[in-house]
Amino acid sequence: MASKGLLVVFSGPSGAGKDTILRRLLEKNQNIRLSVSATTRTPRSGEINGVDYHFISKEQFHTMLEQGEMLESAEYCGNCYGTPSEPIRNWLSEGYDVILEIEVQGGAQIKQKCPDCASIFMLPPSLEALENRLRARGTEVDEVIQNRLAVARKEILEAGNYDYLIINDTVDNTVNEIDQIICAEKHRIHRHSDLIERMLNNA
Amino acid sequence: MASKGLLVVFSGPSGAGKDTILRRLLEKNQNIRLSVSATTRTPRSGEINGVDYHFISKEQFHTMLEQGEMLESAEYCGNCYGTPSEPIRNWLSEGYDVILEIEVQGGAQIKQKCPDCASIFMLPPSLEALENRLRARGTEVDEVIQNRLAVARKEILEAGNYDYLIINDTVDNTVNEIDQIICAEKHRIHRHSDLIERMLNNA
Image 1 (cartoon, chains in turn red, brown):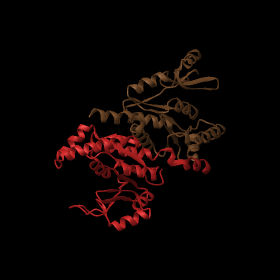
Image 2: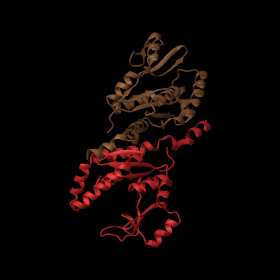
Image 3: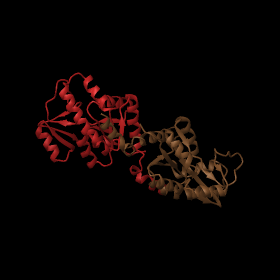
Image 4: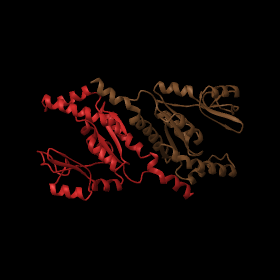
């Protein structure tokens, strides 16, 4: 019914399980494409260009920014990060749904530029569960975990600006819920303002 | 995640296939209850009280109306029709989702009284398909069919006031789409304004 794809902003605190959910969602729904961010930082061991990030130079980044080719951008620790708009535009026009996994400030930039997108915030079952997940990774010292929890609390406060709220209780449930939200969103009336007129005029 | 059920207003022109879709939806999703209208008209052959309608007297109807116990009401051909609010209130508080199959004027009354409801308008694939379905019933003369088509065109013009628009292309697709809309709606942020606060305060 929809003539083009849906843009989905997907956020949630670090440790909520976003990567697992997205991997499973992409397996389940073949019509989804995942946006890949661009960054000026050096690739880490194992990271693949075009998969984990588009690794580009500072000059390239600023040229894209000036030409309006970034949907959103931010700077962390002296490195630039951004969302190239061209692949998203192409996928959407081909009818694919595109998911942008992004932190809350970036999500807000996208929502402002693309008010037609659907935004989903994923919560952990509780802050305690989030802390346990962060500790289970076993890679962070206590101070880093406390910092991440403080950031998580700030991010969760922004969840009220999203269209949908889901709780990552089990992977299967959560994947289904996101899939249902994407399907349902396509039927929202503002996406079909022309359909009613066309039906009445064709008859 | 939702603490109580969702109220769904479901409309569409006569001949769009609403009854078939609802029967199949109730088989698929056991958490749905179907609202039964009250009427002062005489039961037709085969109609069961409490299933097809609550058949009540004019006195009962007006008492309920005066006591605010009707979510909406209308009069056709000297008979009164209305939606008793008590069973809906009870089902919702028990966590059931409640579907109200109703024409567009009644739907507008419900949306005004219960802005929290989700409203779905179901279109036939085309006006031609609608005409074919009405003719296939074989029970109506041409004039009645032309009248129904004229009413359908007026109803379809009101579809823009609904939250969701679906096209009844195949029964399976349409049933799935309504089911997905009901599931997705429960995750909309305005239904969970308290959740974010609770999560941050419990930790």
